[in-house]
Each structure stands twice: as C-alpha cells, then as structure tokens.
Image (cartoon, rainbow, N blue to C red):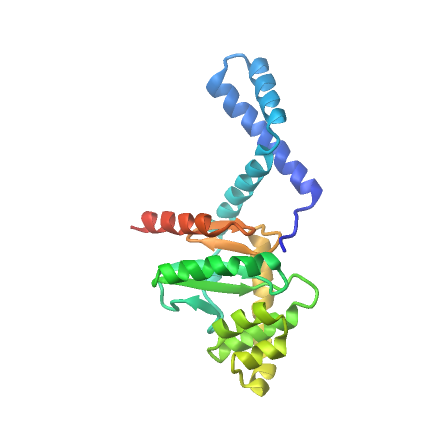
Length: 235
C-alpha cells in the first residue's frame, strides 16, 4: 500500500504549487497582477481535484532532479533480482513490498510490459516498509542468488507465505536461509532504503521508468509512456 507524505510536506508542496501557478498564469494571461491572482485562485478553488495532480507532478519533477545527481547504481540489480530480459537495454526499476496490495495489483502491468517488449529489463528493488516484510524481502533476494527470483516473486504475491513460496519456486532451503541472513542481503536492503529516501519516495510501489521517477500504482499506460519517452530520447 502506498504511504502518504506527512501533512506538513503536502501543505508545503501545495503552497509552492499555488505560488508558481499564480505567477505563471498571471504573466501569461493577464496584465493585472491582482486580477490574475484572484482569477487563478478562484479557478483552483473551484477545481480542487487539480491539486493532487499538481502535487504529484511537482514531486515527480523534484525526484527527477534528485535522480540526475545520483550514480547509476539504482539501475544495477542485485544478482538475479530481475524480471524480463536480464540483458535488456530498456530498464524499469520497481521498489516493492510483498505486503503492499498496490504492488500486487501492479504485477499485471509489469508482466504486460515484459510480454510486449523482449528488450525490457525490470530491476526490482526490495524495499520492506511494512511490519513483517523484511523476512520476505530477504528470501526474495536469496531466491535471486539461486536464479529463481521470478518464480519466488510470483509465488509470494499469490501465497503470502514465505516457506510455501520458496518451496514452490524450487529453492534449496538450507542455502536460501543462509543467504537470506547474509551481510550481502542486509546491505542490499539498506541500500534500497537509502535510494528510495534519496529519491523522495514515500511508499510502494515506486518506479524509475527510463529516467522518470514515479510513486504509486501509476498503471500500465503511464509506465509504457515513460519508457517510450526514454527510448525516443536515447535514440
């Protein structure tokens, strides 16, 4: 499930957005500053449904700026923790949690994108933000080490039972349990948390489609559009 930003952050974002909107629309449409502010304010108050969209757009813009200052490590998968084509040139990054219903709902979108694009590589960043999720994320990374991540990933969302999902994926349980407790896995989870925070993500699922960071269950169309835009830019 996506987690909301603190109310103070939402208030700050909306205040900034309103200020920016007033200035832009005032300069573009009206010569009288007072009239511009009044008309814009009146319009926004009459259409409050626009404010969440504005806030989301602002957050995505700021996340893109932060991504530009980060290294390329966020696009590099933990061994085996990838869906689609491991050698694909088009990359979708997903931050996920197995107890997040929005992550589960987004699984069909990811599968559709993978089925349509044989060159798509989906780098999954295990980000256990809900209580009790850490053990599942650790076993998922252990499955990656054994080359069985996709099978575990699917089974875990279907069964919501770590041991049953691990057995369904055909894991060597003794090795998986040892790997799940390893320092490499601990470091990966800590790194994913650090990256998510650095990008300003507040919950799962969260994405980097091409070079566009996005938070929430944004859906197939928006993910495809962002990946296509990145491909056009690269081309």
